Length: 357
Image (cartoon, rainbow, N blue to C red; front, side, top):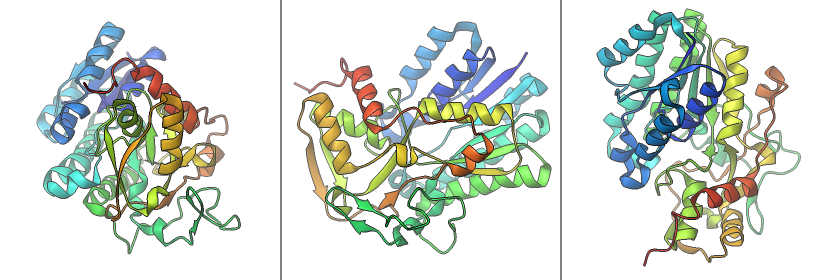
């Protein structure tokens, strides 16, 4: 038996991972206790995703409602499957800057301690399994905001001759900058994953993602920017837009493209690797540009409440360089761009995201 163990299996990337690795003929074990409902309310709940996974995959998917902070319960799952575990895909997290500031201890326990619990259980019970971690570009803190950005009509941009014009590479420092409480917990987890690779010789990778998105995203105001933006336009919700004149730039990567990257690493793993993972120059937009696309796709006008003050630690411009990953895995390619992503989100939710009476 070959088992893929997926944490956060009801979330966007977790659910995509379950389907992807089940599609490779593997038995998938999912761990998810729907903490997103606690974080974000009903909008963020993963219950619907989990119900669909169970219904669609049948016996190929086994679910555990285990809390990754619970070491004893987590160990029982690992003991049950042991060396049959062929890969661990760790996507479970508290993902919001704003929420982390409200409950720093919970945030750190989920993101940092939960990751350490998974690493140690993998080392003890399935040491040969590649360990794939969903990190974040927020480990760079607000360092990207020191870049020499130029204000344009609809976005901020880097000069064409800047070394990071094609995207930020992994050599950007994570030190001496403001991270947010969320960023701190993810840095701790990120470094732990690297260290288990280097110190214990485990095959680990940190994928530092930016806007990971797709139609399965549980679009909540505090997390899931691109999906929530489309949802707000479709439902006639007022979208709170924080600072930078709405010209802040994000690259966006579809969950399908994330999983093909994970599969590439799974098939040819390395130790202690770090990869920036995003849409790069192929798939990016400012908030203004994304709103225009959402209006065009939906035929509805966006309602925007602009707030002058940007969120603490928020990136003014972020485009990832995937050059390092592509060097190691030259067969991997991006297949989605922002217009395609928004159109798919719209089509998947057209019957449910409608204006409230």
